View 1 (cartoon, one colour):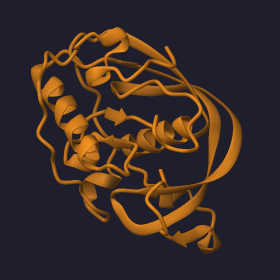
View 2 (cartoon, rainbow, N blue to C red; view 1 turned 180 degrees about the vertical axis):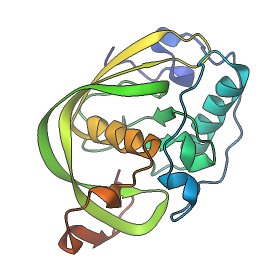
View 3 (cartoon, one colour; view 1 turned 180 degrees about the horizontal axis):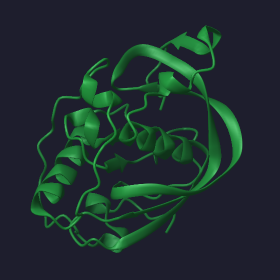
Length: 191
């Protein structure tokens, strides 16, 4: 699935998979919080607490206007759940819409390229990180458990891989080859 329009609650085709639930924005944890370096647990995408967490994740993402993605560990939940919406980023080409995925996994990655990344959990720094520019990700929609396949490229691919790293207890700084790749954050359109 690729190229959906501005679809509410991350639902392909406009289906409201979160049952109309309005999430509550949560605080985003900052490094070196231990949850950010711990692998997250798989979830049952149909469980009510996962649907609630998905709504909270989206509400938090929406509250952070310069942020294109968040993972559940960043809001204090050690669950394999990510939210992203890279549509407004100037380097986006593909756009899956505003989406939440449960138990996402990278199925294919190709065309590796370095690019600048930042993170809501790490204030004031960006870095050049090598990522695939074309990916396929599989996961499930919270609420229905419906399987989803996302084909992403360019910035959206980078954003999704960044969130997948959070689920494995990795920060973008863990992928930096050396100090020369680090930069002070100069603007708000980093990953």
